[in-house]
Image (cartoon, rainbow, N blue to C red; front, side):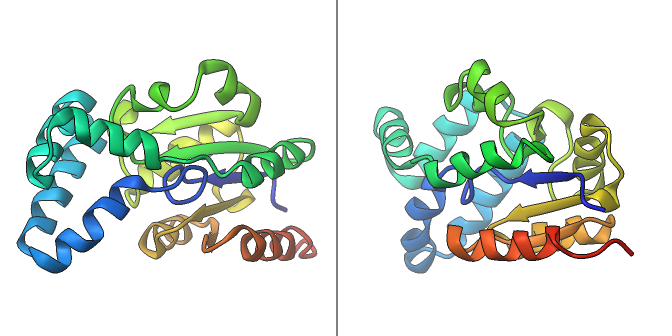
Length: 194
């Protein structure tokens, strides 16, 4: 029986501004993708700070640090339709946010009150030292919710993170748009107990 629903942040709860900024860059300069991925891995695992990450990312993208931060802030739009739905889910399910994000970076996007309003648990990779698809990221999230892994549904806009959730025993839904996600989630939640 499903007791918890876990959401990724970027590309699900909040638009993924960085992906939009790097998409064309990878086409024009594919060698930069490895640099961006390595930098994100360092930031998401807590090896470097959010500030160090954003300064280095601006250099890779050929932007001033101020321009980089402005573009990120402008394009990280909240998925309010999904957030409203999360509030309705909280009546019957525990809800978590699991994000690959540098330490302290969620605080720039959500107030403590907002995080408490929408989520029962918040797990940021930079804080715990494990990033999706590492099994520990999913395990820590389920533990903080007080549920077993097989009692969770995880959603992410990246299939390899969904595969990581499935590998530890969670069900997973690839997020493409709200309407499809809601249909897929409600199908999972209405399944009879095994």
